[in-house]
Image: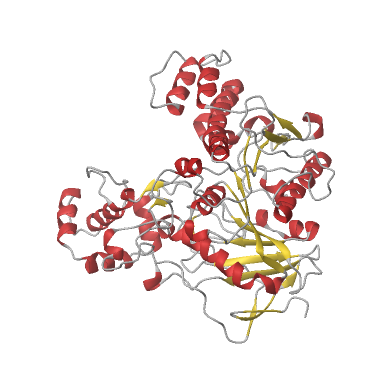
Length: 550
């Protein structure tokens, strides 16, 4: 049988995609983190009896009803998914066998670390796998309060720093890599050549794996698409919001306070705090474990927002370093693998479009809409791409490849000019990486199809070449524009731009963003019709400074 494989857990069979790629879905890579395993490091999966039919996606991890297809909110409670969600999907070329040693591309979906799942049609790896003979793995990891949460009582009596970390979602991504190391050979993958890649929160989690000492040796290349450095001290999870070192409003102790008030055990926060201080660790653990995921989410996200202020990526000193990421990068004490890092030119436009107030600005003054988004997008690039590259290169790490994705030719869809409303916005590059046109948030239709597909072919070629060789070079074909390494010298070529042929095509650029260049450009920008909007933008981007005349 073509898709029969035997791994450590047992036998499993998959299916053949329409394009001939081999696909296995819903493979458990850890034990379900339910019951006493909630808020614990993931454990290796147990073997199964008989033969597993790996033809159906595993559960999504519990989340609000956003970015949900193909999942449906069957009970109408506003949530999808389950705590039992640690499953991965595998895509392989038609003729791959267990005797092959093909590069492995391990994908972490985005969604703000509070939503998303690997079953989205946008993450179907069959085209990438079939076109470039790679093994694509897409993985779920715990999200939101299930993925990053800690209370001192949860690990009381434990001597394990990992059990006190609160980084359950991060540990899931590491457990998935360990599963790949132990099993991917059965699918034709090379366990010694793994590339991690991800977009948005997935890109942020790629950074976390580059930083984590626990992930050392589990991957050989990394690609962060629109990722960010968002680590926070573990004290934000462990402390009350009014402690001398304050915790988050949704820290572990504050969540317990909210439960006590909700259940009528305390009339207000002061009473809840006094009651909590008198409770034993066992009582607090029992209280927290008795909550359903929905009850916890109603406490921290009562409005049901797609992105809500949940804790995430704790600098705990065990799973992640306990100093800021840029300091680690500048010191050179990270997992030094070849890296692709980049953003989309208009990252912030999509976020603005989702806000009703900005839709009015888009209609009445599109220039202000685009200008505001432009500086937010440049700040994203400065802080999470160029600053990272400068720090790493300063530490002697040269294998850095920087990009900016500029394609913006969506055109008019359903009466809206998406080229202006979204442009090269957040998530737009995902279909180009996977060769699948089922976009998560932005409809693409038949816009600019020949050039769009040509650009996608080039992007996939670079990504695959990175997986094969540790450098994107001239792509798998050897005929693409050469993608050169980042150069810390001013005025030298630093990044590649991805665009359609009619808008300049794929080309190297010397552009670079620093905090000072961003401030100078914004202060001197005369294009804003609404000067107050410009002032508000300056304060948002540079809160540490007084407005200097923007």
